[in-house]
Image (tube, rainbow, N blue to C red):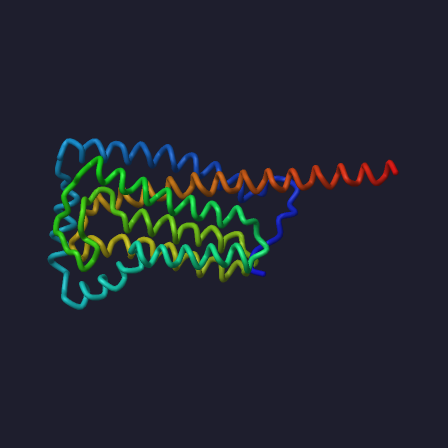
Length: 242
């Protein structure tokens, strides 16, 4: 099977690193996000939005818009939902890995969906342009495609990182997934339905939520391994007393 077993005695180095990096990123990310959000609530304009928009206009071409239109679909609700269902089914029925991974993937995706919708309603930032063809409707801040891409593809990066694949393929696949998160997010600016600050906020908030879910999952898996080890020790002691 693709994933490693769960008979590790102590928390893995990856677990500890993920949790530590997660907390640092969460606190730093939320500080930056809240600073940005405060300006959005006050209806402040951002110079970076104007600069990026002017740059996009200067380089944009029909072929680029069409290409980004296809790419942006891989961050859509339908695409992400189908992908999540496929991965959950695999984790539950075709993998030896703990079912907790499927559970936390669901929590990860359902949670970010609800949080993103709540934030959009809270800030009520208007889009630079409304284009229904590319899901460019509703409010703009933060970008739902960005939060969805970083949480879904980010969880795939985690699954690849803990898999039995060779280090080479882990690096190749995860570098591509990381690139894809960025390009899907930027596609929203190129097609004109988001500001760059929407994208930055979406990536920060989505990454923070992803790391919270992964950290909680790693703690849960560690506790499960610890309980399993305790049960084995108790069974061995009971056997020896006979």
